[in-house]
Length: 454
Image (spheres, rainbow, N blue to C red):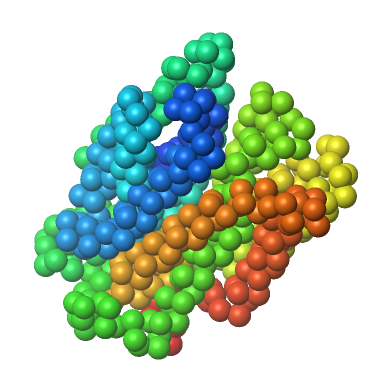
């Protein structure tokens, strides 16, 4: 493949990955605004939790309809829909006149995130050549991380623009409104990327598909790629639900769901959503807690870049093993420090180890695997199911974590360390799950996935 093809494919992948940046941005923007938002609308603890988790309800809705939308209208048109939802969300959450209005637009943005979390990695995987697919799909997780890091610093800089009263009335609005900029960029770049050739062939638009294949493949490979795609659809049953009873497909779906659930049960989102509050509870001031949270984001970014560099060289499973071991060690250590009040300066380095371990493994690698492990006959449906269940797990963790922290019996017996012990145990389970169930997909074409499960 010449450099022209490589650069064009990279442009396509990065343009689509802006949907991931908005995923991260929308997910993390609430962390810097929640304190002032709570005070402004005089929210009780349940309403504060709803302000955060309402977006996850939208994610569930978006993930539920993502398979229908991506199959009916195409991957590109579906990404266009998500961009519009992100734009509405950024405006609506910046200008709410009531808490109900704020929640409504948080759900709208969540729907966009839910759709994007399925369609963007699938689209990139369908565009990418096998030898570069891991790195290119990894750009999706990289974009999520960049979105999180950027919004941490944007929130911090906005907070510095005025005093406490300004932040209470205006500052949090600017935090949510700042999402309009990447939303408009995502909308713009969608106009410059092609539709997935696999979707075009599936819908009978062969000439359009060939035009795309010529742009992203070497000329001598186009016929072979086209034949492989057409062959993968020849025996396809339009009712994908029926195919899930096939033992091969059931096993693939089981692994996809397992990866999705375990990614959330590692505790990553509990730490991302509540990082400033965690650091405050450990003795940091508000400013220092925001800075420490930003450091977590930078580590997340650095090690996600390393994962993208190594995923197609080392393979998927070795990185997942490394990450599971590192997360288990880090969370166990944090739990012990908290349990025995040996806090000092030790907690932050081990939280950074946890973040580094997650970012080099379960963060990007799960998205790579979800985009590629399913055979073509069930890919969109199985991916939609896995992503939907991933958001269910995310919602559960987000709702349960504060209760685990505040539970009086657990505080008495574990001194606040129980959530970290629990997450450490789950990280150990994740290592065993990968060892027993996850196949290595390095250098395999999407059309070879059914043979892989056989």
